Image 1 (cartoon, rainbow, N blue to C red):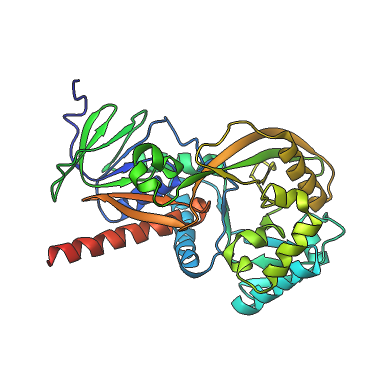
Image 2 (cartoon, rainbow, N blue to C red):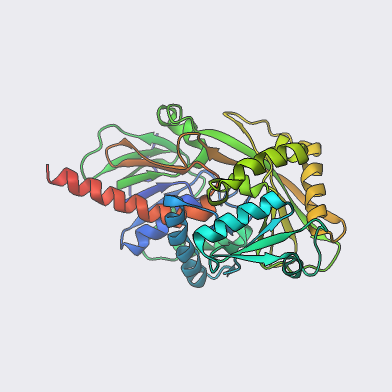
Length: 393
């Protein structure tokens, strides 16, 4: 086979995957003055990076995830200015419709402080929902640090901005086939469907497809696929909902809520009172795009290989729950889709060496939009530390 890339220059970093994790790492490399090449098998990002809520869910994280999300928040805002995509420091809105959900919010507000998690009453919640809302709403909390982007715009414009940078190049429609084992201290040879490329450092950011290219890494870490169902709808009433909206099921999923003592009882309450949502492992939430449409989701189902078929009953359950939550009439359903992201019971993300100067990076908890820019900084800091340690031996 003729090596069609034989004349392409060596780069400091080669990134496999042009989803948000790969692009965030490319942006971090650019900020560090490194030359970058990004390869992807498609012509644009069409996976988890565009099939989500566009919600950087900062406040609901805890521990290291909160640290990464805080860094990522700044990264989103900075790059939205440079790349010209929509972003808004919207904050989040967690809605409580039971005394147990209120207890979770009160506990979190007490732990974080009222400026970060501000408790509001039912009337104030309805104001946030354009005067609408389920009559069962008892209270809510404003989550200060959350931000939103339009997922269908942000990743594409970030890639376009990166492509305009002087030491960045993309190779689309190019599949990663692995690396040659004869890597040296300064160069790794990467086999692709277009020939061989070389770089000083390779980052494999392929999300849930890690098992396709490096099963020896994916299998021991139990990296599987989490499939979810979502929909894009147009509300019957005129709504303006600035914040990302979370509900009781969200309080079981995001760690800052789930780690409260009150969440234990909430899980039992939802299992008894909303079995249809618990059966599909729902995280009932929504965000509003700039055109006024609402992104509604989502269900969760984990397997190594997921079926492509959407369950109408699952969609009906989510849409009925969202309709009840907003209390603003029925929706016009514009689109439905399946999202898939990497998941693992062992870690929320991974930064793992595959070979000398070859590293796999993946978010394995469904929060790629929330932490990717922070994870990118952590990756490069960790690699620099490793290189410095190796150099002193």
